[in-house]
Length: 592
Image (cartoon, rainbow, N blue to C red):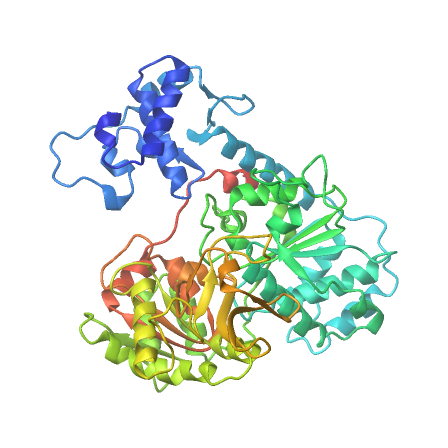
């Protein structure tokens, strides 16, 4: 059976299956199949597999749809559920919750790798415990008046303001979860939470700001610095607010050449509160390690957009936490959650806002009506692209309009700021409508006008994105920089980046970690970033990565306008295709 599967699963899946059978001293086909499938689906972002879904099912239907076998006469059928359960539990390597065995089968017939069961189980326990704990010994004198000042001019009455509710939860509880789309005021809430935490503390608290990527951490820091200027509170409080953010990895302190961190349950963070942004990007393992590294008395404030793309690595933590399985379910986390829906950036008449909502509701027809209504919604447009014959000529006008500006700048800081007003976002990396091809198109267009020398590896005006963390250099995956002439060093080409302190950093190109040209980037890589103008490119054939969450994320990366290129049939199929990652986290949090 595994030999049959070898055509469709990775060598790692096959070797894992063989290893499990070897330590179990068995050639059981049922065990081999189950271990291969759990490894296969974990690679694809799932935390576990459901034997209920796979039992008595053709094996090819248990694989990713792109690998399914069509017109195959000799199809293998997965075992019946009872037989499968019996063979697994008799193997000696599959345990129940509470046992320490390589695979864990829970009471809902979900099969896990041991470590992922532990991550999920311990995370759910920590979150539930925090949601049930109120903070004692608060300095509450004048708190009501302080809150009134913070929220003066709020669009909601004080008893109905979701933002005010979020701040109150963050003050009184050890867990606060805030979910909302771009422009709903998450950063404003974070700034007010920080101010309120400082106000109620007897001594200035240590508040750490963090995010899953360097770019997201930088944006959190920049946004909070801007939001501080709008706060109606004393200079004493503002001066006590943190002014730097870092990645979760840096906060926890990575141990060299190890999956472990310096800060953990035995050596917790000294933080009084941790505020983590872009939580939709955080995988199960990292969220587990963050929560385990908190002191019992610390607060955890989680900010994110539950509707965005899930993490690259296994898990969909924010989505699972916020997803109520049914109306009759309840959770102690409900009292720690706030959902922001009012949009302060686009307004209800914005095409971007309306189209994003239609996509979230799974209504591609309505979304296309909005996108194509140029007179009614000038901030969003559609261009039907059927083939690639004329694509570079179609692209030329946009490139020359949006990208010549940064090349005219004299200073690298100004050039980087101008560059980051526009970005091409592609749904896929490869193929005629992928990132690699569009980076080539843009380079060729600019080179044809004599604006860049794209025939060289290093040239003035080449935008780059770091693709691998390098703490020794101080550059991290997702950091965007620019190759530019250094006028202070005889016009030597250097790589310039804007640091988290808004100060320019420069490096010799030879010192850079792995990187790539970034006129265009994938939607996945754009998470945590926003641009004034976006060109969003869909492939001309359907791909498994095209999901409702990807469409929504691509649409909401812009602050001002977006043009979407693609086929309407592909767009509609993508909007109807939701990400669903198997896990037991939602069931552990929500109960009858």
